Length: 44
Image 1 (cartoon, rainbow, N blue to C red):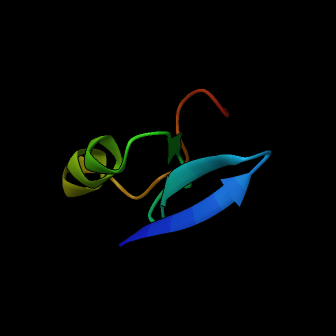
Image 2 (image 1 turned 45 degrees about the vertical axis):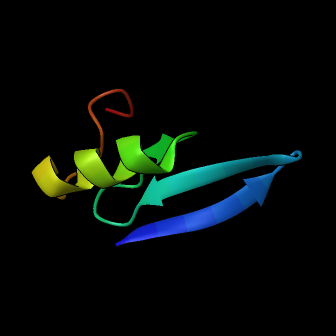
């Protein structure tokens, strides 16, 4: 499921599987379909 959040006047969509955030809901949903449910590699 994609969570919607507002920060600094911008709406963000967060993948609840890995926590990665997107500014476009369709991008977030597409990512979530293929998400491996682990922390994004940029955090490691």
